[in-house]
Each structure stands twice: as structure tokens, then as C-alpha cells.
Length: 130
Image (cartoon, rainbow, N blue to C red):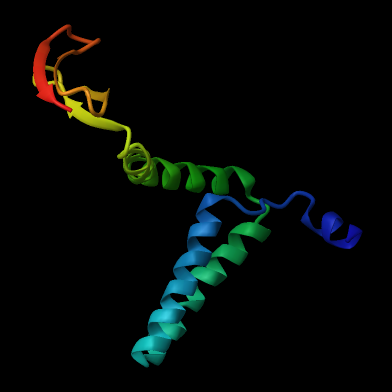
């Protein structure tokens, strides 16, 4: 195992973009197998080769910039998925409303009947049924 550690000294290694490239490669391979399209299977090698190239690269600063751009691109999608996952987990105990004035999302406990909700941000009051 020491030989691998010594080999990777000064190289970039793995990051979020590398993981995304591996997942893309696997998805292209599966799609090619299911659709019986050898071109998709062939195309699945390109993201895999890019991933290996990035992991073994010695140009660390350039790889960091690539990963930063990727994370800035994917962050809104990740945040949206995380928020929707939280909503699904809280579905039994809470309801979510948007403030009609400032569009802030408000979390309110379920089963309280018709209540007056006050937005903590803009102090707008509105009635909703929980």
C-alpha cells in the first residue's frame, strides 16, 4: 500500500467531479447494454478516461478550478433536492407555506386548524389551514 501512497504524492486524486464522471460512465454503460447500442458503451469510456486523467494529474490548481466550476453548477440542483427530501421527511408533522409578500418558505406544524402565520422576515400576517 505504501507504493500507491508514494505514487499519488503530488497528484490531484478524487473529488466531486471525478465521482460524477464515474457515475456518468456507469449510466452510459447501463443504457448502452439495455438499449443494445454499442456506441453508448464506447462513449462511456470517455468520462472514465477523463476521471482517471484528473485523478493522476499533477496540475492541482487547474483541477481545483474545474471542480469549483462543477460544484457551482451543481449546487442549486443539490440544494433543491436536499430541500425536497426534508419536505418529504417532515410531511407527517409539518406543512410548508410561502409568504405572499417576500416569498420566504415557512414551516408550520400540522393539525392546528386555521391559524394566523406571521412571516419572521417581513412581519406579514396571513391565515392558512394546517
